[in-house]
Amino acid sequence: MLKKIGDIMHLSHDRRFVIKLSFTPPLGITIYDYAMKRLGVLYDIIGPVNSPYGLAKPDPQLSKPEDFVGKSAYIRDVDLRKKRGGGHGHGK
Image (cartoon, rainbow, N blue to C red; front, top):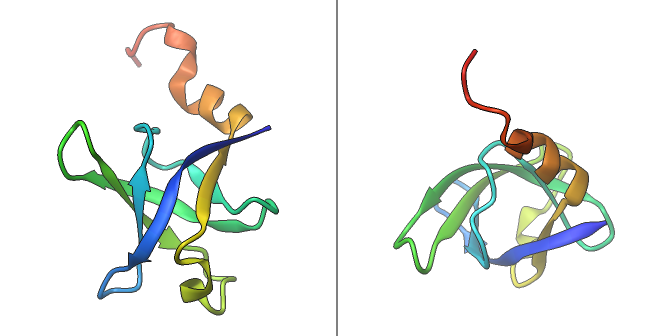
């Protein structure tokens, strides 16, 4: 299952996706389009807590990242569960 994380607003000057987030997903999570095409990896969250933006490095396989501007970004539920770790502590 896919879970929408937000909409791709534009590409930054260094050709990273800028995503208007609908919630704050964990960093390092892979993002996809609706057709399950891998778009990239979320590496930073910026802006105010109540209206965050995510920055994602486009996948090297994407020949034209600009084609995804204006489209929605998704994550897989299974990836979200793995990244959150189920709440069993944070120690190593």
